[in-house]
Length: 186
Image (cartoon, rainbow, N blue to C red; front, side, top):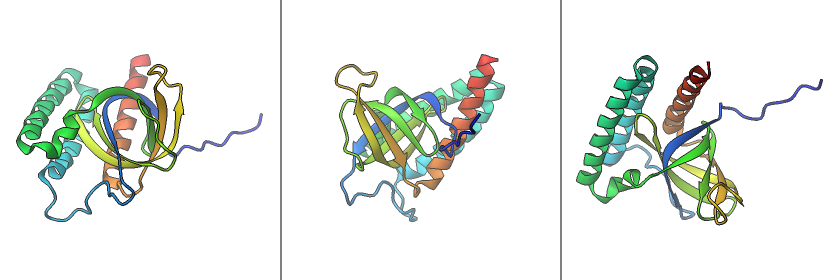
């Protein structure tokens, strides 16, 4: 038997997340460089990432309590969105979708087709913690025939390497969700 070579660098899972995406102009940057005058929404996202780590650990031990904390976090996020105005409304406008995701990229159904090489700003709301991650990605394919009917497109993107903190959080989420999925099948 001939050995096969695995091309993927990270585990890949199917997961339901909140997703919102927008097409970036050629000169647009997905995230600020991280100066001290970061927007409040960016600081809240950082706190959400820390919360997500703890909630995912807790999910293994006590799913009911973790879900309650996730709902409380979502409630606080909604209040923050209302307080901050338009700056953070994007995260509450996320549509729940089943995606195929890893630390290096994702595939998802989209109602529109994107050109190969197009840059997208992706807002992901991870479940059950409701933490929001913002990543930029490059479209590697957008093909007709997804699960959304006749007008849907299966769009695949690779995440930018520069989004290191958000990608690390996503990798942890994927590994934890994979462990939870394996435990359910045992």
